Image (cartoon, rainbow over all chains, first blue to last red; front, side):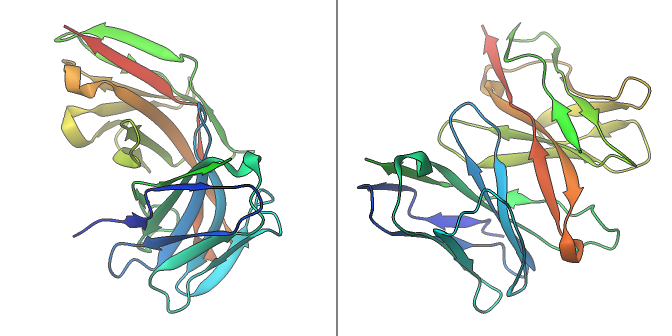
Length: 117
Length: 116
């Protein structure tokens, strides 16, 4: 079990540039989640996938954000035309559907820290 | 709306002493509650969860949590703190999503500092 991995770990970009982050979930986990965490706050939900289908998006996810999970394995999160307010830690988590609804545990990756200058 | 609150921004405890990190919840229906720990510049590590059953839940690294329905609390505890337990602790509640998934709604976190 190699855990959830994310790449890159750090990204510094200039305002207006596009950035893309990658998340590799735990093998065979069918659910994948993206969260955003700003300094001094708990993570906030952005979006989630069940296999390759994106089933829900938060209102936090503006039109500049897009996420994909093309084959139900890894996922990418792209931010277009970055703004300074996008600076945050972007966390990915994965889980495996359990027999009882709502009981699956989400395992988090190390995160990608984005700094927009 | 489902939410959790962590009333203490920081908790200080001496190594070897018992520790408690507090969490209260506001949930309609049965609460599914979680504790995670975050070390600097790292992601969140799962400690334990309460779904149903025994009110005392045992988790990783010697941590346990007590679910109290009448007080709507889910406090994290450890009988004997270690300096290496110093980290940021988050309480979370699950919120159902479309398609059977669940998002976690987190508290604001409690910084635990264990001193020699």
